[in-house]
Length: 74
Image: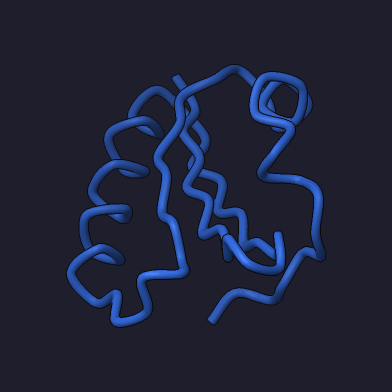
């Protein structure tokens, strides 16, 4: 199942979305989330790993993560 990682800046609503396609996407997303969590230094950034069939579904089920601007990946 595909997986997604969202870095979400709580004060501004800005985000970075990473997509991990394929059968192991959910596992790859979780591993990446744990890597980001280990590097996080700013508590205003929330990091979420989510499994769903598509970005469109994710935007419907987790709309709060899509209120701000899409930022470039670091």
